[in-house]
Image 1 (spheres, rainbow, N blue to C red):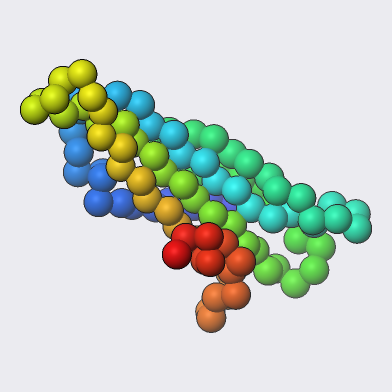
Image 2 (cartoon, helix red, strand yellow; image 1 turned 90 degrees about the horizontal axis):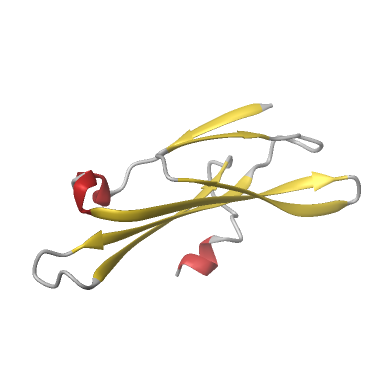
Length: 103
């Protein structure tokens, strides 16, 4: 299957001219043969395209990390780090193991 995830964060209101760099990482679990492996996609966008092989019952578990390094007018030689983390899954009531990592 091909999937797409779109997400939004409060940091989207920060002007692009103030963002020094941005690192978005999407990790998700993928079953391959008799193992579970982490798949990782890196981008700098709010839309992530990925491929997923469903070998069980459409259970999907993942995690998005959005890190932005922001230039501050008050202290030009330093950067402010804005962090946003999102647990992603396909369940109505989550059982996402990444949720504990976010707390």
